[in-house]
Length: 84
Image (cartoon, rainbow, N blue to C red; front, side, top):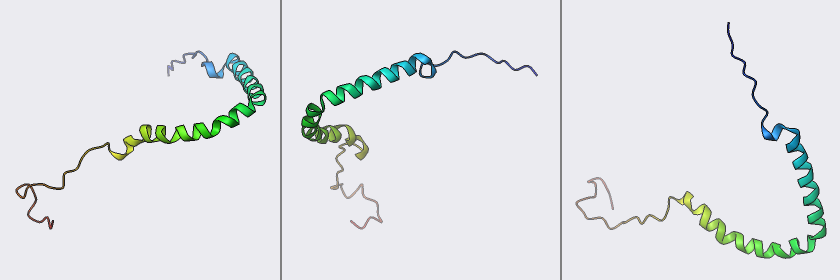
């Protein structure tokens, strides 16, 4: 049996450079948050108000769009068994 075992290059997130980047980013985030906590907490009400229209815009695609359904169809297009 011939199996072709190719050695794959390690992905970036599995490398030691990625671990170093994560550690440095976590340390920087911690210090930024502790030093600027008052600014972050002051921005929370504004972010909450901004979240409402943004969620409405970006999540409206789940409704099937804004297609207008016409309920006033002519009698010729209605099916014979349609009670309305």
